[in-house]
Image (cartoon, rainbow, N blue to C red):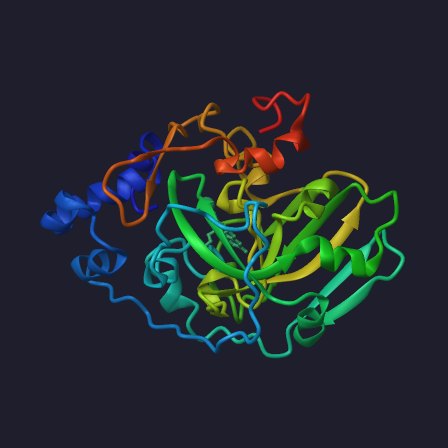
Length: 320
Ligand SMILES: Nc1nc2c(c(=O)[nH]1)N[C@H]1C(S)=C(S)[C@@H](COP(=O)(O)O)O[C@H]1N2
Ligand SMILES: [Mo]
């Protein structure tokens, strides 16, 4: 945040809009425009980051929340130019440029811990776990902006099944690459590195939880978490850990990056909940990127039918 004082009293997206209003008059006054116009008015061009197509992408099964009806897809330019990826920069408009040359050749993911068949997967192995599926999901950042994103990926549970978790495995811990030569902002103290995230095992096995390898039918661009990142659409965006190198089955709740940083503000669960405000801003509404009026935020980001039963009997103000 460029201005910590103002960012302490307003949600970051309102703060950004205000800057945009001051700097970009007409665009902000009408709609904040598309991300493209936003960037033109703010002196930053969108970075073109076309990627190779993913062959054989399947349409998702019906009736499971794998697609979003009646809401427009967020343009690829916005998804690929307005990012949170602190390993590169904390400036949402600058991630695409800062991550442009990030190379993923030779990538490996270790899957280990409480399982019968721990294993290292390269990207070819990963492709063999399950056919790529299109999953159109809402994405709601804890900062109160949102998108609708056509991911390509497959259920995380299918990868976990390959290593055969034991009954002692109650949680899944995940880690982003740590390599400051390739992720330059890891030389800063923006967060504690590597970025870590985690899920309860039943959350991880839920069909909605995917490992995404693509966007709009093509491979993920670096800024969105290439070559593989987690997407849990009923949770705030920070749960969706990018550029994963390690997935471990563990017995106890693993530490998670934003919870370590500010436990009062970011819980372990990170479930989207319009009734549980962030201490510094309301979570009742959100700004859909590309729209003018704010939308009401939906319980579990609109996925309550699919996931509410995971949390039966829990106090969602305590376990947030
Ligand atoms: N490794 C890592 N993963 C991360 C982040 C990060 O800074 N580092 N930011 C998170 C946050 S706060 C959000 S909102 C989403 C943003 O994903 P997107 O840029 O693809 O929209 O990534 C999440 N995953
Ligand atoms: Mo976020």
